[in-house]
Image (cartoon, rainbow, N blue to C red; front, side, top):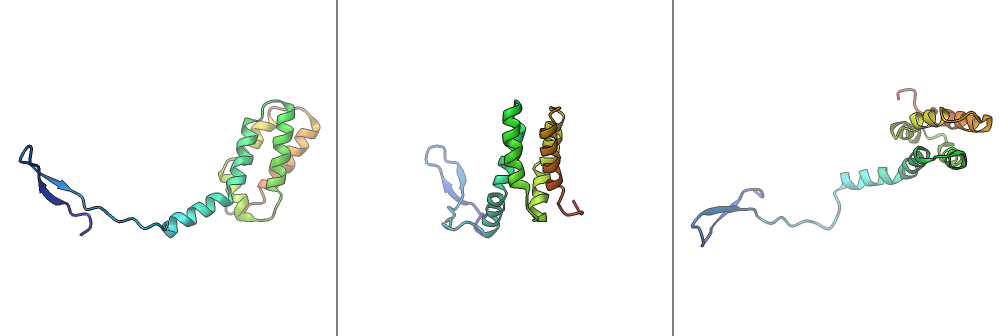
Length: 123
């Protein structure tokens, strides 16, 4: 088998040490890894939008982050909305909502929450 050690004698200590056969690695990425990378790449913009919301301190930065989040979350792809929930978009938006008393900012956050919750009802 590939993982069976090959035994060699050490000249210094007269001890037999196992050595692993070297595996030849193919240059291609296994399909499961490739598929996972494509999924991660597909939702990388979602992750960035949620992280930006989470780091937005101060009114101006929050407005910019919420505007970007709304642009990212405004679609009808249930799978992508599920990813948004998995990345914590609703939780972060709720946190951001608790930091403001500005009517326009509250309206924007509520709009973003509505967009995120377009996810499948099975979530």
